[in-house]
Image (cartoon, rainbow, N blue to C red; front, side, top):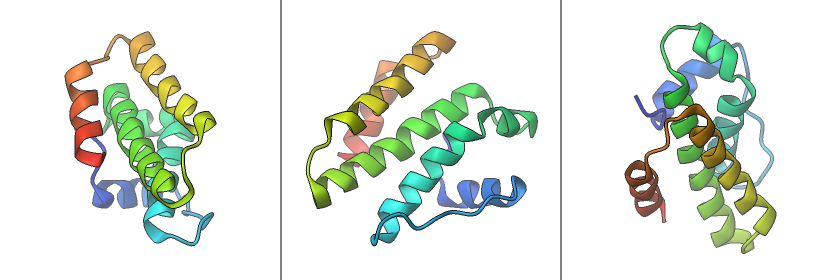
Length: 112
């Protein structure tokens, strides 16, 4: 299950007893960043819940980070360092042996 539903992400925040932060003035930018960071920083506790696999988490991270990156670039312009962080998620997928270029392309087309 791709963790791209705001409802599933809100549920994870509650289950992990974590709270989103407001880094930017833009609500959607904050939502995407908070969701991506939750999936990155709490990967093992999320797996321990028994509901989501590493594949679910990594593709969810890619989805939310790509959404954040697209919105960020629209508002503030391109940031090469942030683009590099997106490639690190893809590297993690490759390392885990779960990379699917069709799914990655579909996410980028949906959000781009």
